[in-house]
Image 1 (cartoon, rainbow, N blue to C red):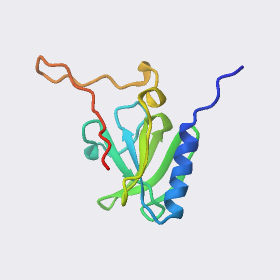
Image 2: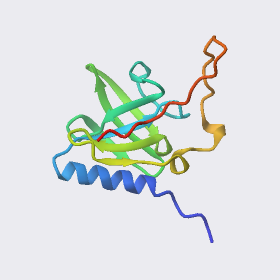
Image 3: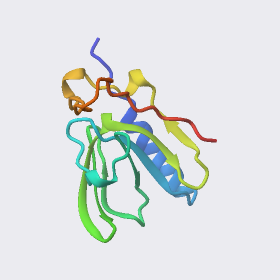
Image 4: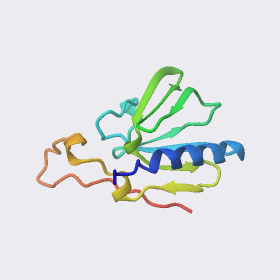
Length: 135
């Protein structure tokens, strides 16, 4: 038996459609440290970036099985965003916070695809960012 395809891209598409159909604003939480993530780096905080992916905020949205892509403006500057589906940590509605977070085992890619941590200059090891569920 072959390995089944990942559920993540299907769940992202379903949640995006549900939020859009209900007049909510879908947001993606993305692990920006993953190789292949193309986002404006100045908006990355603690290794994560939150992206408004509503149809009114972006153009040319493609929710593929391997890659998510769209065009957006960041403070009026156009940018073509590209995200490996594996980089999506969660999707939620901006108005209500309702959505879905992916567990560590569902979202962590093989270690070889992670960008190595930047040296901190101090003796302490860099801490891995943590998400907190806000209700």
